[in-house]
Image (cartoon, rainbow, N blue to C red):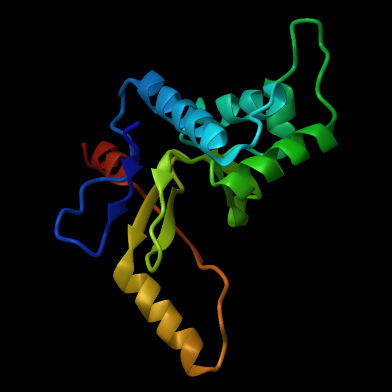
Length: 176
């Protein structure tokens, strides 16, 4: 199965990490689900019905979704909603397996279709205008953060960088 590589902003091709307006989002969703199914089988873990439903809801958008908003999206046609603990457990599984990310500054979650390499830091570029989140990787930022932490004697176990701003698409819209 082909996996989607992250855009490495340390390298010359710095194409947009944001989906083009009007793109075929069904491809994004199917890539996320196919990756999760494949890796779950490979790892011997279960992508249960509720875990899959939560992942499908996350994969339906490039905007982060809060846990309680997820509960609303998972409501069935008769008004029955999953219990919050059920959704949080599903989110914990998706985070542990690398199928989703938590956007700390928004207390919300996004689906992940990318493979993450060792050494590079994943950066979440959050558009304050449209709410979309782009996911990029930078070896240079990862090395700089590791060096800064190491200089203080600190041994990091993970690096998360969130950058708020305006995406190229929104900037172009306001320039028109």
